[in-house]
Image 1 (tube, rainbow, N blue to C red):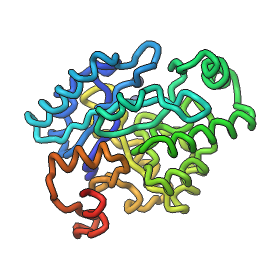
Image 2: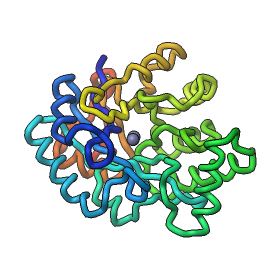
Image 3: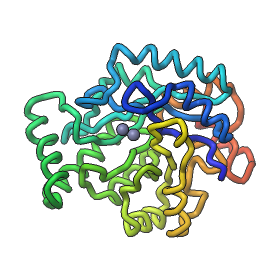
Image 4: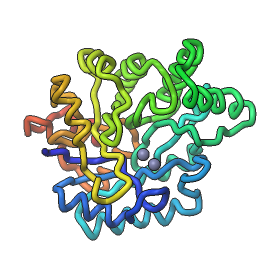
Length: 280
Ligand SMILES: [Zn+2]
Ligand SMILES: [Zn+2]
């Protein structure tokens, strides 16, 4: 297996079991060149990284990079938390990060009481009891699209976990915006049917472990099983034998500082002018 990056890993800054350095060491052992540290977001009720811990997490990433040679990108598992497509993190929080992940967790506070009762509690209730009504799915889908307009989201993590949206519509819009859809290798939350439609529409994916322990860093078995089962072309897997062209200026800024002007290399091993342009 030759995944060059794993962009969704947890540490003790949320409820992972390893440190930033241990995740980086595990990646180095497996030949993974780049990882992101994406602990749970700032407004997650129980598990979120605290704002005051963020500078230390960023320092840890820089040190782990220097010690292991793996590029360690500071990130967070940012939560969609309003129907208007807002994250739990503020723009000033996001600016400090090197990769922008978008997701949803039911145990995440909304920024206002109104949103708490409309967006959050409605979705939470539905995730416990039964199928979401179509009206709510439409509103959630719209929230994802607004999120993609508002922020330079690099990838959407485990879409449809705890929240129901039209995953195919979100993926189509994500493609237009240059945002990848995650194939989460802890638990795949996209159905085979949805995946097949996304793949045939040319949606691009990024595979991630969602590791909560260093041992699981780079474990893409669940994602690979889906790729094989559904014959998804590896050219549509952005971290397979190449680095993704993530959308955010945060990521571009981060890789520029470590890789300098090094040309991006495509899956076929050739330099691509378009990629070089994107990186600079
Ligand atoms: Zn978790
Ligand atoms: Zn996660």
